[in-house]
Length: 517
Figure 1 (cartoon, rainbow, N blue to C red):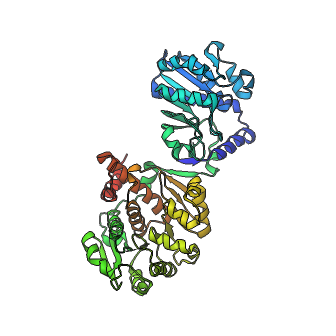
Figure 2 (cartoon, rainbow, N blue to C red; figure 1 turned 30 degrees about the vertical axis):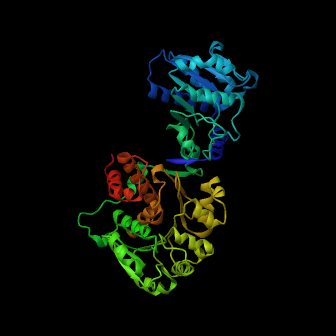
């Protein structure tokens, strides 16, 4: 599913009206019909039901007036609360308002008036329609509009939002002071970023994307992101040939581990196994090898000299280089530590390793010491997997600055350094060097625990080693990671979920995607 910004949607609307000659009044009529159909689908076609419609003075309100007219024609009882004076309603919205019987319309512009008139109406309503604001809202919701939002939410009735729940920023998904919590949201031509990014996603409910006659080519050529869902991810997965053997599924190398952080190394290696690698080798400090031998049954280990220090230094670079010719992908960083000699090893490996490369955790911290080292990598396929704190260190910024616009942040960095970037979080962002962007739709809050990033590293390096291209490996990896966590949540709930739980569900996640209808 393609997802676009509110600003891009405004430009698409403009092109449809001015360049393709589609009247705005026609688009409004189609939008109203789409909302009516969603209401009927959700709540039944039977007449005699009650709807309360809250509408603003702009085009979103105009869509609401069309919905009111169509429901009245279908035998519904309808009341319309307009949060504007009649003389301030103009254009296409005014034309549709004129078609409503005056008896069903109330103008509420004085604080308290709305509650007095509509509190009882809301208790009796089968559905509430939110047509207050569209995706163009940029300011905090206040005054009578805030009163309306609070009244709608307090009523506890099913809510259908027109285009986007009022109070949600159409591009960032931020709550602008307060926002309607919708049961269903009907949007037009394309989903908006505010529908899928949190916290907007929590307010959207079931999302319906309706065709209202805007030419498909306008949406197709518009800048946007891919929203990763099971139906788009499943076709990327390769089914296994019945005659396949372990040599067909790649041999990945993971350089990881330091004293106190052997768990990160083990999680990444074991996750690579669970993600389908034919062979996995874990290169670790020699003094920690006995521990990793116990923690990794299916993965092989290579002990590298550490003089008992419990961390790797750049002195082991020749030993690692000797392993590279027989490997298909390389991951650097889980639990590696931040000793100066370890940082030097990471920088040296970036210059010498030509394999598809995943950098995570302490590998990222090493890169952050001199981010320009990314401009001198030998590998043509480099994947970085930072969480917001690591991203902030890479950019010399604050976490707040990173989180203010995650998509723009990831795009700038990926383009500047020619890398594939996975910016982790609730709705992980995946960006290629050319700017093509995906937003992950899987996962849940149970993943907010230690070790989840190590599992993702194992999945990504495994997919690269199996021969998936960088773009597909990143998209598949983040979705499968989140989908495995969703399967854990289904069985155990979200609280107390561990990275090991997710790791063990990886084969189930693959199976689920490959066998879904």
